[in-house]
Image (cartoon, rainbow, N blue to C red):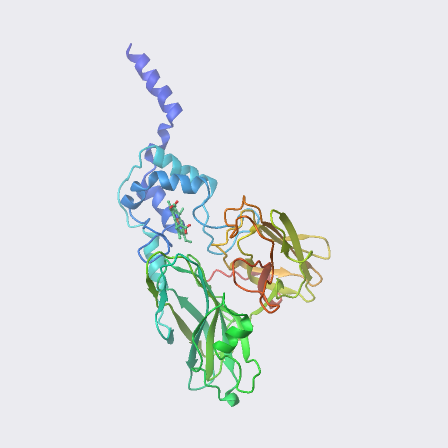
Amino acid sequence: MYYRKIIIIILFCIIQGCSNNHTTFHEDIKPIIHRNCAICHNPKGAGPFDLIIYQDVYKRGQMIKEVITKKYMPPWPADPNYRSFLNQKNLTDNEIKKIVAWIDDGKTEGIANNNNIIDSILVKKNESQPDLIIKMKNAQIITDDNQDKFLMMKFPFELESDTFIKTINFVPNNKQFVHHINAHLITYNNNQNKNIFKGDYIVDTELFSDEECFEILDLRNNDGSYPTLTPSVSNYLPGSEQINYPEGIGGLEANKKNIILVNDFHYGPSSSLETDSSYFEIYFSQEAPKRKIQETQLGTFGISDIVPPLIIKANQVKKFRTKATITKDISLLTINPHMHLLGKSFLAYAITLQNDTIPLIKIDNWNFRWQYFYTFEKMLKIPAGSEIIVDATYDNTPNNPDNPFYPPKTISERIGFNGRGSMRTSDEMLQFIINYLPYKQGDENISLNTQ
Ligand code: HEC
């Protein structure tokens, strides 16, 4: 009688997995949640609620189980098996299994410890003091019409003398609504004596072409020519961490009169009236930049044509290719795939003259919301003569839940925009931005992880 009971208990244990009982929040689950979730799910982050302490995770157990098994969270569209990147937010299959088993087994708390990775992540961000802070002229009002907003903004700043800049860091204020930004640096020749504070500071890019936006913000030189523009000096998406390249890489030159131009400031839809006072921090440098980062792009506005031309007929799923030959050895640092709402998948790789494939990025489920600038773990050499190939698929059927039109309409690259593309989400783009340096011996061994 007695031993029968024991056998039943043992069988029960085998089926239910008694061994999971010693998985606890503090020992096993907290480090995973802090590393992959709390960076956004904290009181100042983009996530709608906190995921930091035991109670936060305890009360949302079922929801967490669902979002991690469906791979909806953490948001990281790139396939980590194809190419892994710096600071990637991604749960391994084992981590997912571990969290799910812990939830199913009753969410044991365990003994509290001081292993709070999130503390060091949040503190690290405030460690150094910037040399200069550049704020918006006025706080930006986000209206309550539930619409996305696409703006161009200028942040002018005047210096006493020409200066070297180490980094420009964007600090989002209203993190729930700042969807993403992409900023360039404009430097004016001192002999132009340009009034950088003249003109509007903000313009709606859905209403005007790029040229018109430049006029409204009064960005051109006094003589009508265009000033020097360094692209992508700062990019932000929720969860993206500022990249500090190793000593000797990157850096900028500023003159006396400069403008940080956010060519693309996207606020997400809001149903309440909100304000935002995001700003930039500038860190100066004593030294002239030794290896300046270069940027180029394939596809829309870029060095290579899209084949066939980017026209996606209504109710069509269609693949497009754009490719470019690399003429000199280069070292890739950061890449950014870009499409709008009809994007379905994105694949980029290089083929060398020896026919070797260098995987760059693979996104099987395109997500308009999460368009990171992906930084490689180490500099990646692409030898001269290689071809960079990008294959992008678009879904313009009603099956695409992000399709802005029902019934679908034919969408192309540059509808009604003076022959230029636009950030309007109802127009499409196919762009692959690469940030690189001319290759130097040994680059492939340089880690970009300076944390
Ligand atoms: C890069 C920022 C970021 C990271 C990292 C992140 N989240 Fe989120 N999370 C969000 C945002 C923003 C939302 C709001 C919904 C949206 O925008 O998709 C959200 C929503 C959620 C939701 C609610 C989903 C719903 O249907 O309402 C859950 C649950 C969640 N996250 C859990 C997690 C977990 C668990 C992790 C880590 C394994 C994680 N998140 C990592 C930003 C993030």
